[in-house]
Image 1: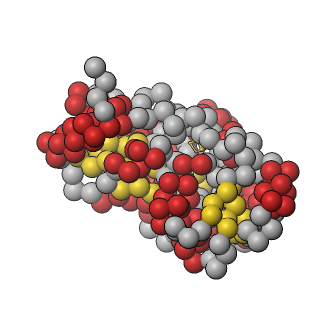
Image 2 (image 1 turned 90 degrees about the vertical axis):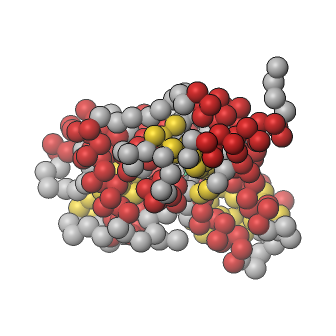
Image 3 (image 1 turned 180 degrees about the vertical axis):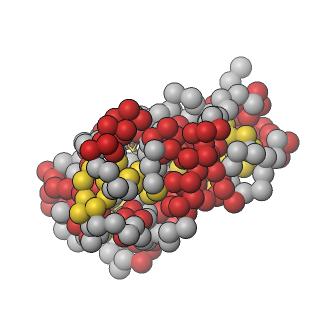
Length: 307
Ligand code: 13P
Ligand code: SF4
């Protein structure tokens, strides 16, 4: 028999205590998963929380590369991904073999890997970045040239401000790529006083129309600070849960019905409870890959976030 939400939440709390576990949830997760989590945040905040938390077990409600990053940063902890099928299509767009080929064409040029990559790809990279620190990471490098993977849109955004000669891989996030300039035009017409904030994974034509471009956590800060009462938000619709909770007097508009990441929506509370009850879906990374990938993640964690 299926348990109701209250009973599931009660079992979840007692399992978290029993296992000495912490539940992390990305800002795109289902509302009920975000509500139940100990910590919600963007990719950077969750990586830091995973590294800093003294617990034995991390239940990571997000997608595979996020849990893998937690496993890389905290090898002594058990990291659980409640849904093993929650992947990131953008991370799958570049393989280790692809990167070996690209590096051979650019000797001496450092590789900046967006965290949305596999451990094997991170292991071949010099430093990682997230959307919250990408410009700072690129500017922290001493070379004039930089190669960025896998997101062409984030790379293009960084190249607008970073003082570097940049080249990048041609990957993209299928969810953010679905947002079109026409959607923003229509939303602005319907809400002429609204400001438009968007994620740097959006296409440059959409970024061009934004009043502010930032990571998901940057959007929470911006929403509180801006005097605007209506915000058009160009990112995955899971962001609405906390935006609405933290800003009851403001209106948030998601300008396209296509802004749903199917992978981020897979995890249910029931999945979290079952994985923790049975201690299944443990994410591991082999020692040699882990060591090299950790160096790239550690290098990133030393750079302060942009916003
Ligand atoms: P951030 O939460 O780091 O902004 O990342 C967005 C994203 O697409 C994660 O998959
Ligand atoms: Fe990957 Fe895009 Fe989904 Fe983020 S929103 S997990 S980048 S597919």
